[in-house]
Amino acid sequence: MFENFKVPSELRPSDPRFGVGPSLIPIEAVENLAKSGAKFLGTSHRKDPIKNLVKEVQDGLRTYFNLPSDYEVVLGNGGATFLWDMMGLGLVEKSSLHYICGEFSDKWYRAHKLIPWITAKEVKVEFGEGINPKEEPGFDFICCTLNETSTGVQLSNIPKLKDPNTLMAVDATSGAGQIPADFSNIDIYYFSPQKVFASDGGFYVAFMSAKAIARAKKIQEDKTRYIPEVMKWSNAIENSRNNQTYNTPAIATIFLLNEQIKLMNKLGEAKVTELAKKKAQLMYGWAESKSYLSPFVKNPEFRSQAVVCIDVDEKYKVDDLIKVLRAQGVAVDIDGYRKLGRNQFRIALFHNVSYENLEKLTKIISLAIESEK
Image (tube, rainbow, N blue to C red; front, side, top):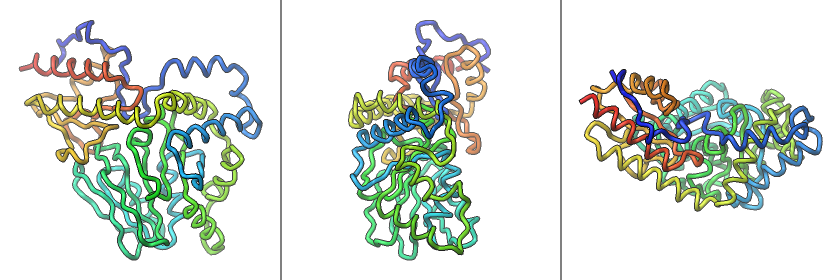
């Protein structure tokens, strides 16, 4: 199927990368890294050139997200998978409540469930359905996902907690930067930079409220609880205050992250969000206009403006089409999430993926499928 399909030259996108992660890193950012010469690469992360770079990242994020003055920008090595354990060990006192709408929010729950002293409860919907968190008595840590990367489900509301002893934690890995959040309702907000912020993986950014910082300190003072040095929040917080990471980071990752922050700060979060919504309208409108396509997330309230998942009629094998498009260098990594096992596309709407290229992609896919009818 699709073996005879040829992409018309006028529809070829200027950049073929539409993957959800690792995401499209602008070539200009890579060129700027090369131009930096010996200033950064090969320099200790304890020395001023790198500390100044880290500070620029932290200040740039404060500006972009307009963070409250008492929030700290904590940086470290390891992605979301690492942080799930780190939070369970060092931020949950006794119990965590997990709102699950996809594979990654489920993995967060399973990570906490394995820790013997934590009571972890799941509130789960079928993948593709939306879910908003609610406060429940008896839980000192609530876990929710701003944008579920596997399904393209987006939160529409994060409640303000009434219990002063409960922390609200938000996994913003694939939504941070173009899905707004009210930080007055959030105590820890974290993301990996390989999505909207166009860098490499293996790194995390966490915004922590004063209440979250206090919880970390309180738990670490409990000498009966074992926490590996690399997972101690005190190490991450102390080093971040000094514009460093606890252990040696990949400097290129920080450099590329900073390039993207500067790029997005030129527009500001409101404009970036507006552009994201426009791209989402394009993609969902296209899916609804074709009889052989349908948005995986049926309820518009929960449809993501960062990751779109589109189901395809079983008559047209997505895997076959993806192979043909990749071989022609016009669409890279638009596969559905593997564990869902659905005949669908999963396409990033991240800031660097242009509206014009998304429009070309929709025309290519439609032309290919309609040529098979």
